[in-house]
Amino acid sequence: MLVFGARGYVGTNLVPRLVREGLAVRASARITAPLEARHWTGVELVQADALVPESLPAALEGIDTAYYLVHSMAAGKGFSQLDLRAARNFAAAAAQAGVRCIVYLGGLFPEDADSEHLLSRRETGDALRQGSVPVIEVRAGIIVGPGSAAFEIMRDLVLNLPVMVTPRWVHRKSPPIALENLLEYLVRLPALPQAQGRIFDVGGPEVLTYGEMMRTVAVKAGKRPPLIIPVPVLTPALSARWLWLVTAVPAPVARALIGGLKHDFTASDAEARRLVPQRLLNFEEAVQAVFDAEDRHEVQASWTEGAFPMRGHRREHAFYAKRADGTAETAASPEAVWQVVKRIGGRNRYYGADLLWWLRETLDWMLGGPGRHRGRRDPDELRIGDFVDSWRVTGLDPNRSLTLMMGMKAAGSGVLEFDLEALPAGGCRLTATAYWHPAGFWGLAYWYALFPAHLFIFDRMTRNICRLAEARAHS
Image 1 (tube, rainbow, N blue to C red):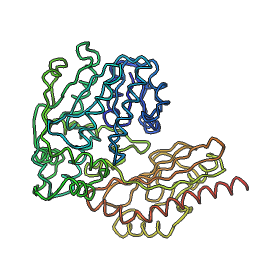
Image 2: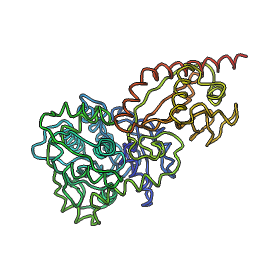
Image 3: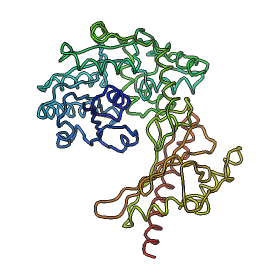
Image 4: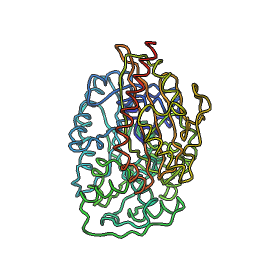
């Protein structure tokens, strides 16, 4: 089995489900580092990009069934053309590799659909079917699972805004499906001869308005449901800007989704239910399943989008993260750079813009946080669980990466991660990335207020670390 697009929220959950079924699984993504962070046992990882045809044969070699779970919504304007090109490349490569079946996860399609997002999902399925490999297309609406863009938008809104002025789409209806039920369809349908080459609508047992769903999310999270005030003046463009302002959902994703929210969705799922009988979770049960899954997550070693531990185990902290980074390259080896990185904090401070760090720590101390009270257990060595001033070490891979969780008071959760990459010609590339999971409007305001400083801080930090590593190597 190949899960192509294993980095997404459906792929992330589908891979371990297939493994539990006793199947041999190969997981693919454009970048394999996020897949490595999932620590899947017995899963082969491969780097491939449907927009780079020469990368596909290695991913598809020896594959019987290939799950196609990729889309380009986050690419912004013109993403539908990228989706079409990727699907055609994949269909051709699958035929060349002798793949028996492609399983494509598409979306429910209303008769009057006109948004680029909805049209692109349908056209992608059509492009895959133009190849010679039979395609099973599963069309779903809102998927209730961690990382589902529509679900995360609802979560961001209801857990952080007591009053919401919304477009009229809040009264539109959809049959949300639990991630657990969707995975059951995806696992079982490819094994059925009568499912080959067919399109299946799938949905949950209820048809609800978006307003009803948002109220349920609030109640299950232990929050008072927000006051929802629909207004007729918010166009799709204004709605997308509004979502960008009050949530952490990436702007291209918000724009793509908003265009489809003006429709009512229905799922003609009788045939899917007949072929794959199962108990469908209602929306309340599906939301509880999301929260239960987050609560079961163990300590996360490195940052992964939406990882509950990296959000401080706080449901009101956004699934999606804002980020800023700095990168520098050096002739020094990764081992030499690591010797500098692991000594960060304490008396060594942060290798640049120390006055800004001091001001932030002092503000935190004045607000009752740890502020300036912490240093380091040891000036030269680190271990998991150590404190580095107001940060805690949650991930440590010598000569490769260091992950720190922020402990200062703020409206959200922060992570600072250092990645060291050996360069082919020798030397090292060092990247420092700050991830911020905001809690509502104030968390977003905090991020944007500090964003210019972040760009300066991390660029200077990485350059200074590399210079120190070079100086120590020479001495």
